[in-house]
Image 1 (cartoon, rainbow, N blue to C red):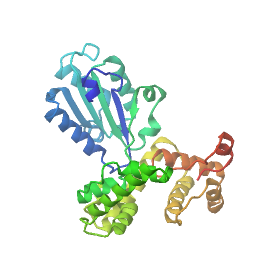
Image 2: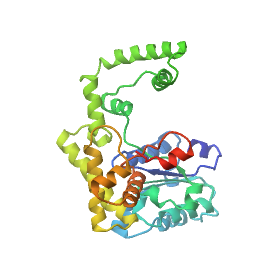
Image 3: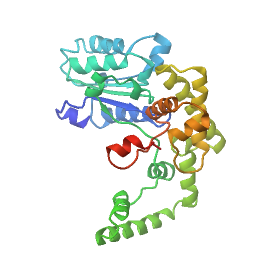
Image 4: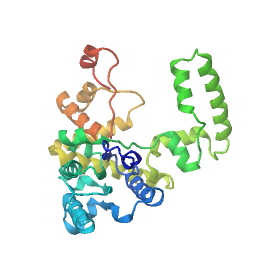
Length: 314
């Protein structure tokens, strides 16, 4: 947005896909507050709305809201717009035509800056035309540093990630060794202020600490909420975009359960096909869709093109 206000109009369409509960709506409200308080943008130049409410109460479309905002508030058209405006669209996947509406607004005026958030289904709905115009910023669940920051107000030492990478990939370099030792000592001193053992915090983060809504919940409520997130992705994101039979729906749930309960390590689509007595093609299709919804992630074989193609993905 700062680049846009400075005159750079290239990245004017930002798409924020991510799982339910990772904080997309919170980010949108923080951006709204940033524009008002720090950039001193007039309120009539900022439009925020949630598409699920738009659909539920008015049965309206994103394109209609944008047109009304430009015509009624600014008394002009997109083509003749002479002031920068910011359009923040939450839960866009509730409108099947969101991509077309965003594309039209992007093409008709360089004065429009759009941010579109939604479930990970946005990854599946990006058309070629929109993908060419949009800058995609996928929001993932929290990593351990973010977990400690939000739960304990704990800031790791500056340059910690670079130090770890240096120690792993170039451990013999004196500079990496010295920097890594220094940041490790500083980290250990800071971790003393955390009330619980670090190992327990790490375990909690891995099991259920990826979502900000879990930070003040007990374990039972946390598991129930996460289970509902997974169920909603299966019922809404997947089946709203690709039709599967009832039998395949059961297979999807079994795959997720199998991956969640297996011992640490990888498994391949071929092994899953054998264990579930399904065709490898079906398993591969299901895994492709699950990966696009960010419920699972694949690890490709390391090596040349032939190896990547021939060996099974984990």
